Length: 298
Image 1 (cartoon, rainbow, N blue to C red):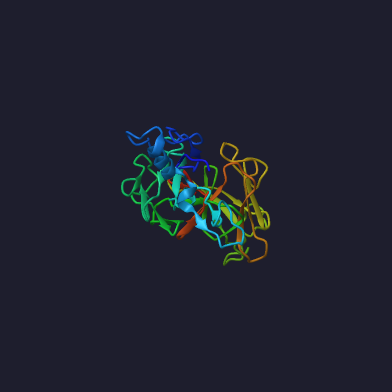
Image 2 (cartoon, one colour):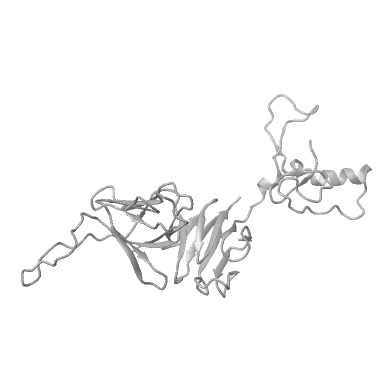
């Protein structure tokens, strides 16, 4: 059996006197001052740091002994770390401070905001004072918006139904779904029809929301489908360098049915504003204000 120091971050088994983990570079606890180099004391130290020894489980007798006379087989854990409950963490991908900065969500509840809470980003003007709450329950992580002005957006992993007035992010564009069909084309009380551009058959439309709350571009679906991207789509944003050529799509599979938002293989993903507490999983991404986080749950 190999003996050594188990890294508390990645579980790598290092040589007993290693200063840093050979896999992830994490600083390891130094050996106790005055520890003997050899003999009985070293044996005790080696026994204390032997990873498998702490997690041995007796197997049921199988009729054949293993390891020695009169003994029975032992099932050993690969590493003691698999018995430890690892708290979720948020990794900064883009935003205030250094990219890659990690926030450990060690408590049961953590508040994120601009001026109040456990995770504060004072330089982000798009964060509310108390913006969102992260809750850890039995190793599961949940996020909830605290009635903030700008909300919390989570990257979709699969086609997701959205509803009238829902907001979603594509690149740097904040877009809003209008699921209402066009009003019936009728004359006014004098029997006169309003003259305008030719009508299109569209089941819904999408409107760009501008900084400050104003309305920008608006585009109607082509029948039951609306594509979004940098070029060659129904709704195009050629100046947005964070949007892929064909980025996302809205589609209503059946008349009167739900409208489904899909990411069409974009580089930066598509995000939907949450409306209630939502569970987060390892590898999820979320925008809170200008902060883009990746969720890690080891």
